[in-house]
Length: 408
Image (tube, rainbow, N blue to C red):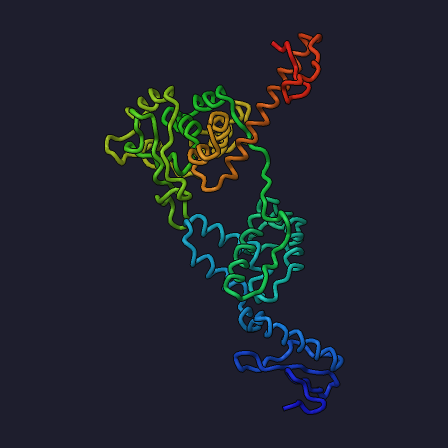
């Protein structure tokens, strides 16, 4: 049956007392949906209906009420539903509370736009964003946020909204800033072998081998402090990483699995340190299989927050010429040394306890760059010592052009 003149095939438009036009239609579920705004002309209202009809025909229509959940409750549920380590969950809640809650907590998911994300990030970097904090929050809290912390907050925002896309609450993730989630931390120090031992010698006797094992086994603080007697195999020259300490707010030190599945690993250590490690364990490690290898003065596990004052860390690293160095940089040093010896990226990943090859490739790249610098230095010395060395003509039997001869 043909539509009467003036009637629309899809949807309806009515003129309001104000003179503006309101558009509405019956959605695929049988519910009437009204345009979120009114229009100056009937044609503009008709255009909105045309778009909605096309979405239904293409199967792209979504219920506009679905994405009207505020970001805050959705983000909290997102954190709770994930199998996160306690420390990671605490970090996510802290990032949300400090950097996301004020700007997005009560904003509906569907109303978060790329422009809002860009402005929020810019405000953080420029110090115009006032983070959520108590009345005792210092003025320092309103200074520009470090790029590393902004990247962490952005990654959390992007991950939550990506799940909202998967849940079909929004059509597309508004976090679209290229590189915004990439951290570019300052270059961390890499100690020489001499510096590693100099630092170890500055520690109290009970913590000396902690430094050496953490470095040459590339262990995280929570991993090395959780090592037990049964984890050390002197015959094979290995340490087994099967657990780690994490500090959880309100709970203190919690013993659990390593940071990732790849963190469960057995690491070979240089045989040169085995006699010293064996002597350490005779003096400071209990006889039971589950006795901790490294402990504080009273034989208990060492909380991360207590370690620096216990060993006078800042004075020690300044003494060896590595002022500002962190404990984690021992692992960085160990990874760098391992990269120069590892046969493959997979070998390095296994030693480091990483699921992703990205970190391993970074260390290998750094080692390759250092090796190239060494070769260039040798080349300069060779040329200075033998200025008569010149390139020969291309060997027709060899595909390599410009080969050098007589380089000794």
